[in-house]
Length: 585
Image (cartoon, rainbow, N blue to C red):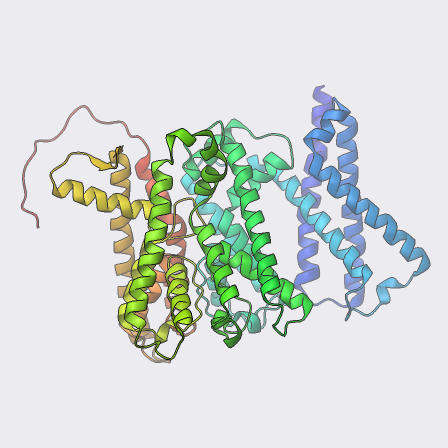
């Protein structure tokens, strides 16, 4: 038995090595401008990699204790391998009939291209599964969950910047802009220092879409989901890690919750893409662009990223007043912003506890979302009414609701934010600061934090020792965590605005000096991972872009990390210093 395990381990190591080589070969194919001979050579090498993966699966099958259990433990690999073998057999028959198929014109998307694309997908899926098998080597490290979370985001951001700089991914993209766009995508912000459709090629836009999806779900969530669904083994260590990262109280249900999260995410994104595709039937899009635009905007909206791969985005005349598009985008934003756990509770857990009613957190999120959306829309409409006199009542209401919804973390804009009144922008700043629900694709300090702060301040004003919401008492650790998040966020925004006021108005002499309010708006947008801008993002200096990058990153993972660190139990000393009074207020 030990010998079988040793053989299996050696095979897995070889598969892992070939997995990294496969990923590198796919990056070379789609990232670099290759001549015909070099591309043909790499494709032949990739066929060898595919054979290695297939042989690895076969060896695993014969080394398995039970052949039936092998099919149960590795269903995804078996299905993917079977589909690839079928396409390979069909392609082999085609080669016999047409031996010079590689010499076909590359200007058209032929059957041969479909086969090669399927082979690349097979290689990427097999490589990803091989890497997750060795997650002990990179999930590792004897670090706390909060640090692993930060490192995973940092790794994806750097990798994304390198991929965006590939020759076939972009045109004239500087390193600072590549890092900026990668950070904005992974942190699902949406601030852009470039014109996405003109600077990023199709390959670059696919990379951008992948970064948004990874940022929305999180690299730890994705890789652990693969460990659960595509291979055997979800260890206690993984469960504890995810419990801390996702702040879930139930350890025994974390795996099933994770599967539901991924399932809900992809289901909503697919439904959103279908709805957008159908709503654009009257637009002059060719079929491929229509499909790709629909998928891209659906993922971007649900992940609350705010990126668009269409020129000027939703501010384009075809989108700005198109009600079906704006309504679908709003619904996707709301679904992504209310949080995975809220969805999971409503769809699954809520059925088991109908007599108990909704949990307090779910109530706060749902009621808070409704109040912020309708309240924000009403205030925006009252302020902007005179400015929108030339619009119909329907268009005014639609604009008000869309601005209210998107301001809370999505970043889409159907009208230029630089043209709205300053009081409206102040309302938008408040909505951006509050943000969405915890464990969602949105940012900000979160609705629950905001509500806890309000009830906490009100309780302390009345001299109460406890913070109560309804018939519930909030744990003081949660109140302290909320206060820490509030203080850190205000301090971060103040320091960032101060820094940008200096760099953009005194050091960035080559461009027009930035208005202070525009800088403050940009900073809060970056912190809340919203992506709305008053038009200054492309004109920021390099050092200014680095500051916004830091704010986006900290806004996405820093406050969560701080909250987790503060929330951990500490050993209390058995002594205390003498109490004294100081005058405050």
